[in-house]
Length: 231
Ligand code: 5RP
Image (tube, rainbow, N blue to C red):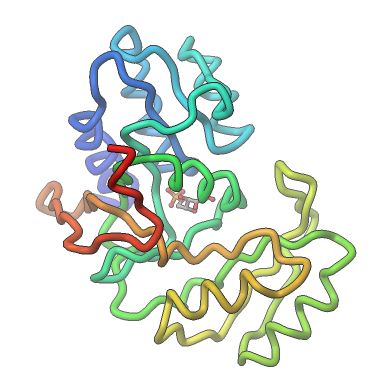
């Protein structure tokens, strides 16, 4: 099995978490591409999908899957997305595809975050993958200076604008020992829209594709911002 086969195996397994007649949230990336293609085969089961990016919206629409406005949907049950890195606590680095802000919003609105990855994404410590930070254009230089102060080496993603009209700084060289603290610290820098650390709200179910098929892990964590009263 090559890496794409492992991504596809994980994505197909995630179909089991799609609930009949329930709105679904869908992330962005190549792993999610396999998921969307498979979802198209059972599209009659779902009334529509909340999309996390323009790229995902285009793919969904091309396959005839209705795309819903999050403002009309509010909360929904299941969000399926990939990750660039994921640790044993099911905290993630995301945003390699640049969709981190909409992905984080969608994840916040979902009761269950199903993360689909190939085994190369599993790490002991987050930070080998450069941490994406979405930044308001006028603040790029200031935010880069602040990121250097915390030990990072930010590089502007060249010739790239997010779906929200912003820039991305990819921060190299961070050893993320405290993902929740680091998420809060970077989010508090003026000019930062979103940091691609998904630590306060990590994944609830992890599906990992590997050479033997798929492995599934469930989180024992009650995420900081989950609100049980709305379930
Ligand atoms: C996009 C993301 C993706 O989930 C992440 O980059 C993984 O992508 P892929 O499935 O292509 O490896 O966060 O913003």
